[in-house]
Structure formats: structure tokens, C-alpha cells
Image (cartoon, rainbow, N blue to C red):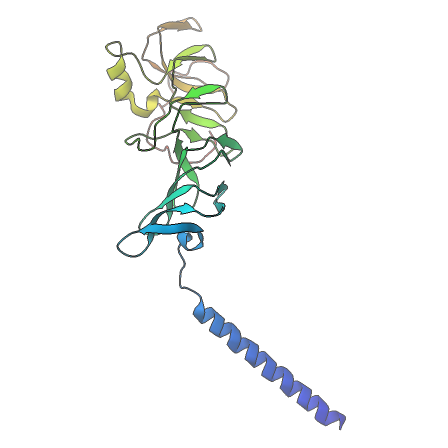
Length: 246
């Protein structure tokens, strides 16, 4: 009798295992194949869609974590046609790598979810520097950037500012160097090391620094110890999307 019960128990276990296996296989078949990042985004209302049916733009109904950033509910998110999140307009102040960015800032992401750069709707002071506001539909320029540790990496200054003893600006007055600043592109941004020290900037005024006479509109580079580095390669658009600590 004991032998018969043992055989029945083994058969019951086998049947149960086969049933569970079939159930798991059926569940796996019901999962969507290769879900895009937007498949998990809690869109509210009626999203705007591309011709292929992919969501192009929507407003978040709930807070959503994307990469290292938690986007607050109410943020406007825009996708590439391939499904990756392209940008987000913040509905509330949001921490990005420990740096608090204001509401209405537009964050731009790379395909793996890292924020590449950001625009500000209005001027704002971050880490003691007055940053240029770019508006919602500002186009044609790289925005402000952060280091991986959340510190400012490169910014467009909203006004002339003395940084580490140098008069810096990202624009110059009309007829007094404005075209020079335009031609410089991202070289006219103020660039910083990860500890906040100035690395590169365009001079807002003629000045003398460490005994050297320097002209307005000149892009100067500094070493980490603050000394001039005439041989340094100028930081520009090239390589702006890299995230190495420099």
C-alpha cells in the first residue's frame, strides 16, 4: 500500500510540474516581443502618435524613473520614432545626479537613458552662476551640461561674471565682439572641472591674469591649479556627449 501511495505522489508531482511549465510557457507567449522604453511610461490622456503607432509625445500621469532621473507627474515627454525617450519638460523642480533643476527645464537624453544636456525656460542661478534661459522652443544650440557627479560641466552664462579671477561671458555686446562670440560656438561656454573650478571661458573684458595681458573675446584654458594652459585643446561641440570625468 505504501508503495502505491509513493507512486501516486510521484505522478502527482510530475503532473503539477508539467502544468506549471505549460502555464509559464503560455504566459511567456503572451508577453510583448521587445517592448520599447515607452511601453512602461505612464502616459495620461490621449498621447500624440507617429504614423507607425508609436507614442510621439504625452504628459506623464505618474512620476516615472528614466535612467537616473525620476521625472515628476505632469512632465511633457517626447520620444524618437524608434521608441527611445528624447526629451522631457519638467513639471516641477527635479534632482538630476544630485543637482536640482527648476520646473520647465527641458532635459535631453541619449539612447541609454542618460541626460546629455538641458535647457532652462528662464534664467536661473545654479552653483552661484547665472545661467541663460533658452525658452521652450530654443533650437540650434547645445544646452547646459552636468558632470556625472551633478556638478556643472559647461554653461551658457546669462551675464558677465568674474569666475576664479577672470571676467567671463558667453556673449559680447553688439558691435563690440558679438560676432566673435557667435563664431566660437560652444567654446564661448564656461567650462568647469568636476570640483567646480573654471576650466575654460571666453573673456568678457581685456584683463591681466598671472602677469599676462589677455584680450576680450579670447578663450582661455586653465589647469586644475588655476594656472594658464596655452597648449590645452579648446573644448567645443566635439565630444560634448561623452561622460568621462575631466
